[in-house]
Length: 443
Image (tube, rainbow, N blue to C red; front, top):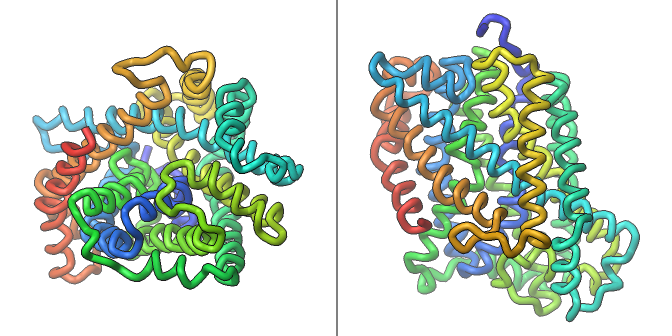
């Protein structure tokens, strides 16, 4: 099976796919409102420290498991676990379940970007008065058009994954990621020319450590972890397609670095605009879909910048949904012996049903709740607050304590011995402890 396993064709493909997996709404939507809520500069420094100390080691752990096993997440644990440790396979099942839940509600939010992109193109987004933007957003998310865009997103995702590793995932990632960075830089330059740019940059980059408390630290830790999509096996499945010559440590550092760069540029895009037009940086999750459209409306050429921004969000959403789908598709293909076509069809069918339920939870199914949460909220909570941190913690423990050290060192060669020891130390002690803290607090 591993001899015929597809590989990414180029180094660009490796970087584009792994960065595409990490970069998504978490960088462009979640990071700005988390930074805004937690005071800006001090949050940013703590966030970067968490990426370096925890994020990169856990990426390395997933990379090592993926390439050493040449299997999906379930097969990786089954192959690498010592005799008598077969229960580790349940971590793989956890990752597959998490990917399905995330893809179900994530596709709904991705569908929102299509609606706002089309409204920007048509000029109708500018026609909504500031006081009515929340009403307009609630009306859209509560209607059936929201379901339509969810189906469109899943259809695009299905078509890409159906193309396979090279002709589908790698080819599309090679196209979308450079375009995404071009859009990021274009929007950032425009924001830097705004009158309030200096105030926005000062908020983002000048730390005030007097504002730091436990919520800021935990917020930065959680954002660093969730931004990189760790704990589900996305990096593991992509690493299983790496060639033997791919430098894992360098790839992990590049992935984490570019993912962080996207978050920083998103902040540079948003905060100068927020301060220029007197908006509230701590607006929270509604920052992108309610506050920013109002800001774009007041900008010169606002319709153009609004269109580019929501196109950026759409591209970032697509690259993340691709990786989420590949987790289940690889599992169904390798463990159940399905053809890729059948695996994609089954995965897409399941997610279509669950995604439709998530979309309807803002309208017809809004009164249907489980433990006080709508279907959308339940999927988000279970996947983001339970499965991802638990999966990340168990992957860290497995690679740090269970996996043969020789396997770890061999896959990461020629990294210096001191650096390898530092990575293992983080996987054994720092990452599990920090992730456990996230798990306890967010539960």
